[in-house]
Length: 234
Length: 267
Image (cartoon, rainbow over all chains, first blue to last red; front, side):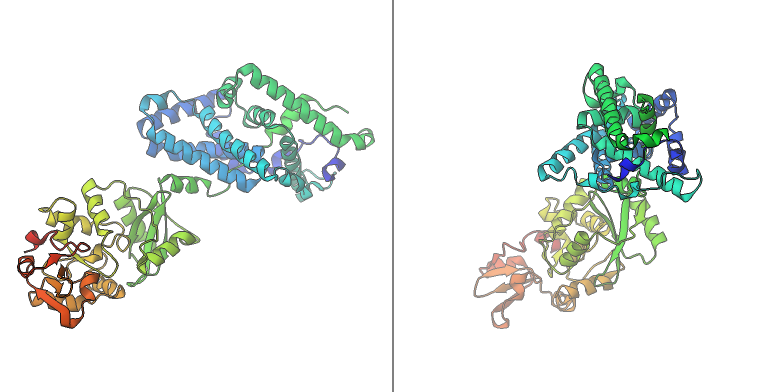
């Protein structure tokens, strides 16, 4: 497999592939847990006052993370876009029917996460029944990027994108319960209490899924780099 | 060879991606918090049609985008975004079929923010068949508000989706064509002609005091624009000035156009 030819543990220059506008959006959310918490409290208050007026802000603040979760769960950008849109539209319809008290009680981040994950799970179920669940795993042609590169060269950007693709593929190798737990914890950065709500499982179970998922990713990675092990020490 | 859990976790933090451009607008349109708009052909020239996930919300003949967006915001309270690809294929086809007289063409309408009375009036107007007309008083009687003829006229004037809700098929009781919100009475005539109706002939009948047409073979009396009235051959066609005259002559009212609805108000 092409990605097996790249033995480095890849994250050194990967930040180059991130679009500045993306960070511009995410940073308004506050990068630390407190910032996110404040943003969530403000959004909840705004929703309780007027769902229609506040919902565009919900979309603005959560579309990137929900799309990320869907993409990393499903692997296919088109499916992920549909799943994210469906989740946000469902969320709006639910909010529009909720009493103010119920909105004030919401854990918005966890609740939205539950909705997008439910959609992803039913899509994965449909894909499995159609027998096409693995079709997206085969398309990793970009991963044949050069192994050595200048930090600022076009090659390095291609390489970083290819690395992200490779990690995306490795995640798809996890069973869905471990995949969702790992994504929520390490890609999305949810706290364990939020994850327990989002996944509807006790914190202990959620932690176990994360740990097993990371262990499995290490096994997958070791299997990839094993054949070229001597290059690592050269 | 050292692959640590930490190195894997760091690699995973880099997997966040931005949602595709346009996601926010798509979601808001599907949720009904914003509309898209595009143009479709019609007998009176291009129409601007605004829609969202709930249905078509506004139809106008505004020639330019800016004035349409201003009107749209005033009527719906929502932003209108130009649709780069025009109307979705299914909606464009359904509108073309509806304008062509296919009443099975399903077009969802988003009439939030309008009164129950207005929606009753528009729902009733939707029952008037392609190529036929009914008086304002007929709508008022049919929705159980026989005295609200003027309010019916006002509601039809506020119809946000002209042509789709066929307010052009509602005319004055004296047979004249009446007002039309989408560019005036001449447009109303043009649309009715496109549906195969001759508005001039209807006005001539009305000017001669004829309000009802009966068939001496069936003994049924109709409004002049009813399809059953229009297929009566000249030799069997009987003209009446009032329903009382027709009933005195032994005619019963048509069950399709229900000429008794609004008859007392129209008199």
